[in-house]
Length: 135
Image (cartoon, rainbow, N blue to C red; front, side, top):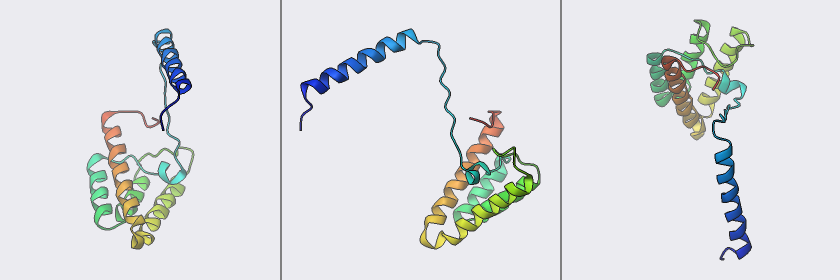
């Protein structure tokens, strides 16, 4: 099915409008923020070596690295949930670990566990580079 002449005109008009808008809006900064759920926001900003160990543990024993990371919250690791009490964030991490362990049987938890570990390493690299927590 070929695009009609009208579709081509509409696309050309959109490109022209984008070109005009780009030249008139130079210097405008657009900031994008990711909205995280409570479990995802509870992932702690750990030191890089600890995050790598948690990723390793999550890769071979789903949920174990997440369980270990829960204790880093009790040791002072920051999270994206500053308004929540430390115990609440600890239990959110324990809940994430249990979800990973219980659903590992059907591979969902294992995959989630690996991604969770990758997020820990990413957040740890942000911490090392001095990038602000709220991206």
